[in-house]
Structures are given as C-alpha cells and as structure tokens.
Amino acid sequence: MIILGIETSCDETGVALCSDFKILSSFTKTQSIHQQYGGVVPEIASREHEKYLPSITKKVLEDANKSFKDIDAIAVTNGPGLMGSLLSGISFAKGISQALNIPIIPINHLEAHLNSVFIEHAELEAPFINLLVSGGHTQLWLVKNMFEYELLGETLDDACGEAFDKGAKKMNLNYPGGPEIEKIAKNGDMNLINFPRPMINDNTFNFSFSGLKTALINCVNDNKYSYEDIAASYQEAIVDTLISKFEKAMNQYSANSGIICGGVAANKRLRYKLDKLDQKIIYPSMKYCTDNADMIAFLALHKVNNNKIDFDKDFSAYSRGMIV
Ligand code: KG4
Ligand code: ZN
Image 1 (spheres, protein in one colour):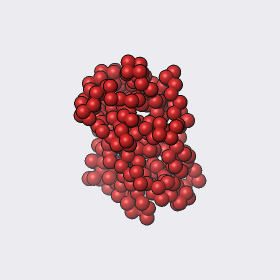
Image 2 (cartoon, rainbow, N blue to C red):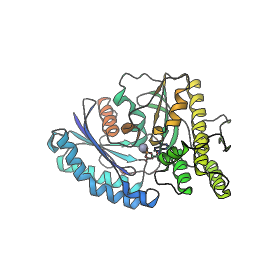
Image 3 (tube, rainbow, N blue to C red):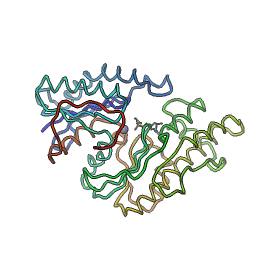
Image 4 (cartoon, helix red, strand yellow):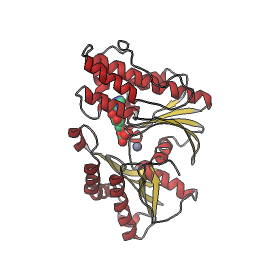
C-alpha cells in the first residue's frame, strides 16, 4: 500500500510517500517568508501552503518514480495547528482523494510526532519518554506502546521554542531565535545571570516559560550585561528546566529510552546536558524532529495496518486538542 502524506499544520509544507513502512520520497519546504516578520504570520502561511503543495507533490511523486495512479490512500494532518494552514492541506488532500477515488485518513499532528521515532528505530521498545520541544509545544509524553500514550505534563503558557524566539526578538536577533541565541551564547557566560528555573521544584511535569521571558526582557532593559552573557544564561535556564523534568519522568516511569523531538532538539547545549544523564537518549534525525509529512504518512500506514481508521471523508480541522 502506498500512502501520500500531507503536513501543513504551521509553516512547513511537507509531502511524503510511504510504502511498506519505508519513506519512498519526501520533501519539506520551510517558509522563509516569515523571517522578515519575526514570527509566523498565519494568513501568509496558509497561502504559501496552497501555492506550493501541487509542485511539491509532483516532485515527491517524480522522485519516487510514481504517479498519482499509484497512490492507494492519502493522509493529512487535521490538527492541532493553525486553522488556515490545516485547511489548505486538508482541501488539497480532499481534492486528490475525490479525484482519484481513494480513502483519506486524518492524522493528529502530535501523535505523528510521538511515533516518528519508529521511522528510523523500528526496534525501539516501549515504554519511552518523549520530550516534544518546538515553537508551538513543550510536552512530556509517556509512550506505553504505539497507539497508547499519556501526557505527563506540558507548558502552562509559552512553548520553550517561543521563549527562544521572543527572547531573541528582544535582543534584535533574527527569527527563528533558537539558533541565533545558541550562536551568540557561545561567547557568553552561562553562569553570570541567575535566571529563574520555573517550576523546577514542583511535583508536576508541567513547564512555564513566560516568567523567564519577562526576566530576560527586564534584564535587557537594565542594560547591565552583554547580549552574549544574557543569551548564554537564558539558554542555560531553559535547558536546565527541560532536563530536570525529563530526568524525573525517565526515573519515575523506568523508561527504556528518552526521545527528544521538535525544533529545539537541535540545541547543542541541551544535547550536551542530556548526554550527561545516565539514560539512553535517542535523537531522531533533524528532518524527523521538525514538522514533516513522513511522520504523517508513516503513522497512517500503521493505523491502516492495525485497523485503527474509520474512513470518514467528512472531517475538518481543529486548532487545539489532544490525541483522540
Ligand atoms: O519544530 P519546529 O521546527 O517548528 C514548529 O514549532 O512548528 O520548531 C521551531 C522552534 C523555533 O522556536 C526555533 O527557535 C527552535 O525550534 N529552534 C531552536 C534551535 N533550532 C530551532 N531552539 C534552540 N536551539 C536551536 N538550535
Ligand atoms: Zn510539530
């Protein structure tokens, strides 16, 4: 069975072809147009998806030496995400489904992230802890099995990627802010400014980054420290907060391994400190950490294989919501 996957929940336009649990071809276009606005502009994101989906799909089919008639089903992210972006992908997918008279499978974006590790690590044994750290999410999941998950905790306000992005914006750095903060942090003193480690000592697995972001804004306004020192100390506070909850979850649930995904997983300081833990940590390739259609097509194939699909064409998008 060949499944065409479509991912358009935010500012990545992704298309992938998956067969026999292998990715035949895929392409992800990151919308660089948002850089000039310092963040994702939802309406522009939707228009960009609509503009590029046909040509990206054509390319993905050609790269795999396939044509539309080879596709058996189409899978599309229907939430959570930006409403307009999701609808662009869903409309495109429904069009293909109608034209080819093939089934369409709605996929939850978060569930796809949790299972994306199996694309490269089919042998992985549950239970494992997944730390999902992106511009939109900061969540700690216990994965008990494929299709069996428990959300242990999540951010109560900003996502940690958002804390990087907003912190960078305050220091007049480019978007996305995470890599920019990481870059200048190399020349700063991470121990100079004692930024708060929010909720680090409470007994939940939740996070909070908005107070930390306010502390950075106040620090920049004080004009006492260099941006390099602020960036290094701020990054350290975010990383410490993530590590502390992650380690606690690994121990409490006796997890076999820990998976880190989402754009913030690229952060080298985070990886350095994770590697210091006495735990088996798996870092999926970055193309599977960030938003991609490979994980959408891959999960859809598993769902079909396990009879977990109801082929109802009358679904729509949802901007918020958990795995259902
Ligand atoms: O998963 P992702 O590519 O996209 C969405 O959130 O949709 O994550 C993007 C986030 C941004 O907030 C970006 O600043 C952050 O990941 N990020 C990083 C690094 N690279 C990307 N944060 C810290 N350090 C990095 N090296
Ligand atoms: Zn995502």
